[in-house]
Length: 241
Ligand SMILES: N[C@@H](CCC(=O)N[C@@H](CS)C(=O)NCC(=O)O)C(=O)O
Image (cartoon, protein in one colour):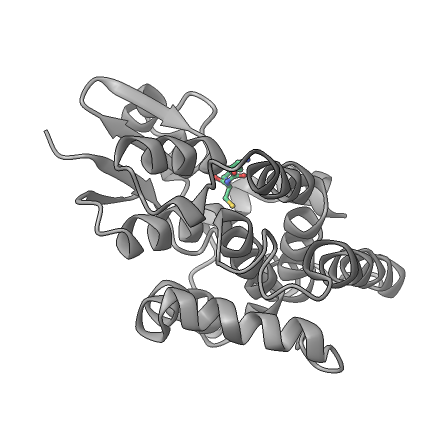
């Protein structure tokens, strides 16, 4: 049975897994889990991932959740080039440092901006108080500053001279608020130069392919049928407001 990747490219962790698998020519079957349609709560998906989040994979009778664990599994199973997840002790520790930090930092703040700027007002029809928005932008700015000053510094990439899982996860996370129309690169030349290097290392075609949905999100919400999302409104409000 082919390796199955359960993904929705609207989701940051799914895009990271998708790009990683494609870039490394890992053969897989794309299984779409439409998160906005609530497919993660279906009976079949529960058998793949009882956490009920995407991404997840099935490799034979082995199922695995969590994007970072998935990419580490794929890196080892398919023996991807060392730079993605270096065997060098300190380089790997540098990658792990970012991968450990990002969950509660750039991922959380970037995702929050996406919901506050776009999905909550445009799809759920709820006005977001200005102080909530300002606080979210302040948190995001704090994380972006740390990415520049702590994680990139004066290196080409987070772990040194070559791209790694840390850069892949970081760029994909940073693109989430961009999808909601926030230009996070403006006034950040170091971040912009790093983005250009990471995009070049991934390849423009693959990067654009993975991001076409999220970068079209502002257009998409104009015609989106948000009725299914209303079921998740209490959860979304609790999470983001
Ligand atoms: N830590 C997990 C996060 C997974 C996650 O939160 N996925 C979101 C999409 S970005 C999801 O599936 N949300 C659906 C829901 O909460 O109902 C990972 O890195 O894979």
